[in-house]
Length: 237
Image (cartoon, rainbow, N blue to C red; front, top):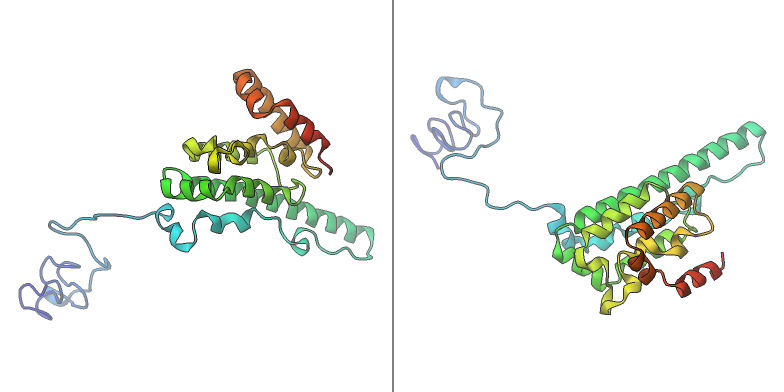
């Protein structure tokens, strides 16, 4: 550091070829020309040794569980504006506003699941943290809290991506309990058959089950035995 002319000499800090090249940090360089706009550049043997992505450092913020509030239903004031004793035009505007809010909530759920899958993909630390905490059952619970109102056909492929992102933890929860496995997010009939699930989401999930039955009927029978189907059908709304 300093190079020819030392600190403040030709080229300022970094000298000729140092940080920022001729003209370096704070100097006008040889000839008094304007300083380069480049803040710094790697020269010589310098190289980047390590980089960190969000999945590597999210545990410093509390782990992937910090995303769970995004999966909770919006508060009643956010979900639907308060009705007023107004004319039919005001009622129509209120209905449109409620539909837009519902669509936005469904979109947030999809994006939150996609983000969660991205943070789990290839990160054993994040996968283990979600696994030991029974996080998949909690995800299903949060999506069930409004009766499944935010479920949509777009959420199904996102859920499949989430299941793929956790590897072997897709099939077993804490203590080997299959009820809390990630795959249950796709097969939880109390979730996908909730009282407020949109018709489009019901149809998409039914089609998914049909495809699974054709592809691997034995697996579907083991994951959805008859008692589970009966219990789901008897679930009160």
